[in-house]
Length: 194
Ligand code: SF4
Image 1 (cartoon, rainbow, N blue to C red):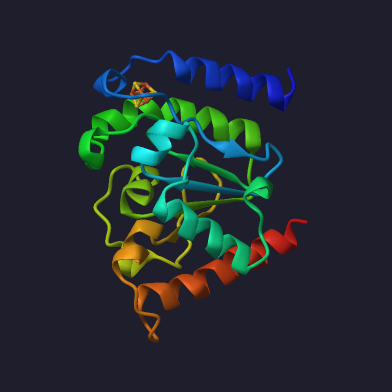
Image 2 (image 1 turned 120 degrees about the vertical axis):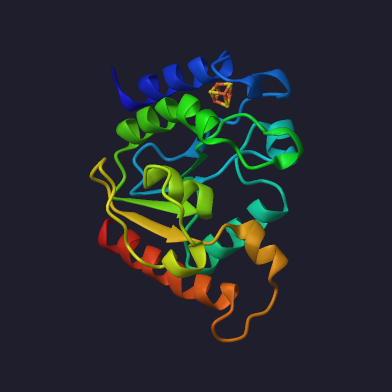
């Protein structure tokens, strides 16, 4: 089977999944999207309202900021893969439980196997914690520092764009300024892999 067929099959399985309670309130699933040959795979936490309505990841206010950040370093959304650990919107955008993440994780792991990126960029604390076996982490301390994952693909943690929306300052040391430095590193890996 080629990559397209494998990913289509995963997306079809996600669309009918009832493995956890989050299936009950979804408008539709949000499997992820992007290039199946992507060298960079971005992983957020879970879909929000806009994503639930559209079926696409990172399209709300935080998603628009994320797209702007990519554009600032000349990376188009279509050239990377963008997804979440959780494929259905949690009620009121609450943080997904570890049980929900474990229930949904096989889909993400299957997607990673199809895409086989050179780098996984986690967006926010939940996503990073998932790859580090549920470890409690402080994203403010760990962003921008490479992490080892048992799956063998390097992990590079960044802030979630929704955190940047709540912290608008661009002063040196601010989340936005640190994100600017982090995305340069992502760009460096992206260039290497071209
Ligand atoms: S969140 Fe994941 S595991 Fe839960 S129902 Fe949706 S697709 Fe299935």
